Amino acid sequence: MTTARWASSSDRYLTPGQGDAWAAEAASTGQRGTQQLLDVATVPAPADVADALQLAAGEPVIRRRRLILADDRPVELATSYYPVDIAADTPLAGTAKIRGGAVGLLAELGFRAQEAREELMARTADAEELGHLRLDPGAAVLVLSRTILDPNGRAYEHSVMVTTRPQRYVRT
Image (cartoon, rainbow, N blue to C red):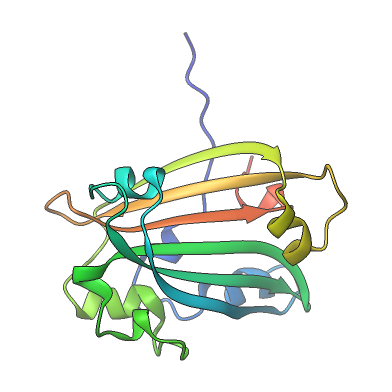
């Protein structure tokens, strides 16, 4: 049995002090990369998020949803979830831009990536994704789910990124 492998550019998104990783990645292809914060809320953890973050189903989490843009065109819908005991009373729970980004803030709080578990799948976009990404009904999207763990094995962030741009996630 052969295990399929792909090259990922995730490291730049997991290392504090890298600045705006998306802006740098977009600039490397001659584009302008920006983000728009859609909402921040405390919500019950969906089952897959609770499982990834090692929480009980329905336990509250902080959810941050962002629209990722390239030259002002939506290319990704990114949703990140954080345990309340980590994110409450921090800028992760607020609607302002986070100075140094979430990765930098988490590092200041003592959370640095030791391991990232990623899963990539393709599926048909749902109604919300169709609207945000300006897609036609029936459009296919790639979904990258990433769970970040600290050196003690604690999962402190789970993100789901939905894109129409496969080259962003898969490099050959």
